[in-house]
Image (cartoon, rainbow, N blue to C red; front, top):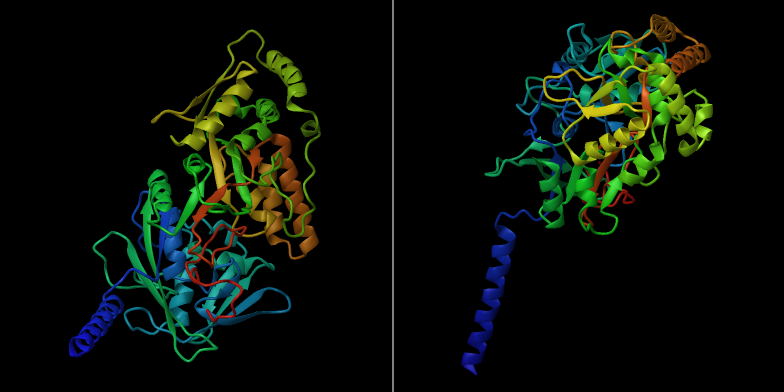
Length: 494
């Protein structure tokens, strides 16, 4: 009897020991593992120094929030600013900063934040959103916790711009969250942590994310093997890597991204300087066949610089030639090509594209479509001058101005001085209807002269495991790492 009791006591002690060992030892359980497609190790950088890579953008958006930021569902929520208001005339945005500190313990002040925002807008800044914020007149600190952004003309989309990682507030290589860097790991992955206070619970909780980068093939393999929970940063270029694998149901998700996926001239001279050739080329592309090859649900062909659903703008009217099936168009297009070139050699068009399977699909499509006109298409080799380059960009707001201003003479190789006049008028217009009318004229000019060869909206994809609950697709293709372990329908505080 005594030995039986002893055995029971020993078993109970062993169970307690194992439970304590499991609970008390450091564990990766509870951490969401996120991989961003890319080759660079993510680090905090100054957005005024130039374009952000995908890993840099994800990191900045999560450790160096702006005045406002995007939440897990792509909605604008408070960042450094706890609240804000807009004057009735729309010319002034006033932000009240939440009392806070930088990671080193120094107080966050409105003077610091205003100076850092002005740095992004300065003449020498290479911030990719600088031109988009051209209506900003000044950024001033009114008190230690209040900032005013004054505008030359109303801009209803200002908040969505301020939420972009390009407007992250980086102070001496530090950000204010929402995540902070936790202990350093032996692995190159960054350990991020945030404390979340729940309104309906007395105790706070922790969110932890392991953030890493990897080339697309390795990222897809890691996802399939269960070594990462979320893959971000996918584009058309690497989509075939994901398509080639047997993925869990609903794992591959596409953002309904707005913006550009098309071709622009990459030099001032050469064959693409001829607007008639540009028009011939755009009409020759079998856009539907290309999109079928990429197999993105809901992605539609586009033949105009603007897309549907932009603020204050009517939906664009497709050119008349789009109503004619491509098979019926080709004979007429071949005749026009013969008249254009006569007996001379047809041009060779070189396109700047990455060496990826998605880019190869695009190149093959263009070789087939333009080859029917007798035109040779090649990938531009290293060191050679390209005739065309791919414009693949997500719009930072729903304003038509961002779309048309990409083709102003300061930014484009081939442009029109009249376009710059229209854009300047639109920027200075204080009446919304007048501004929209000028933007429409600018868009019409771009389409008429074929300064841009549109194909579709940009492709942005992610891989999402069933362990990730708080992920939502959105038009900006920006994904906060907050709330990834929480269902979005739960009323939990951020």
